[in-house]
Length: 122
Image (cartoon, rainbow, N blue to C red):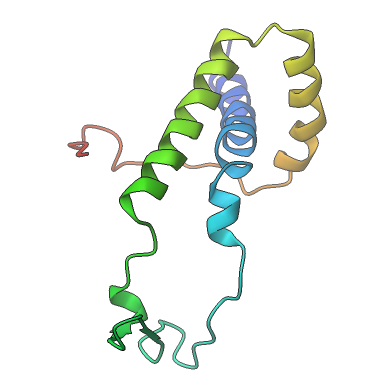
């Protein structure tokens, strides 16, 4: 297999994995809701007022608590595991085929240099 074919196959697989195992997860709940308006573009003009009446700059607000992150990561890992283990299952193949067209419209993936040799922390 030539390099162009390897890249084409890897790109298609990456998009499908992202669509099925990351996009349609708890992450959708995090994405839902009202997005704040920023006139500066970098959200330095947005604040959150919490239950104790503290004004917290948007850029300093934690947008995920520990339990939400655990839930999200469990769901992603379980979906990746299912994808790899059950890739030949007819129902999963049908799901892959159905979502592949939508995922195929996304930008071309690029090599993530940070992942190559980077220290991965918890």
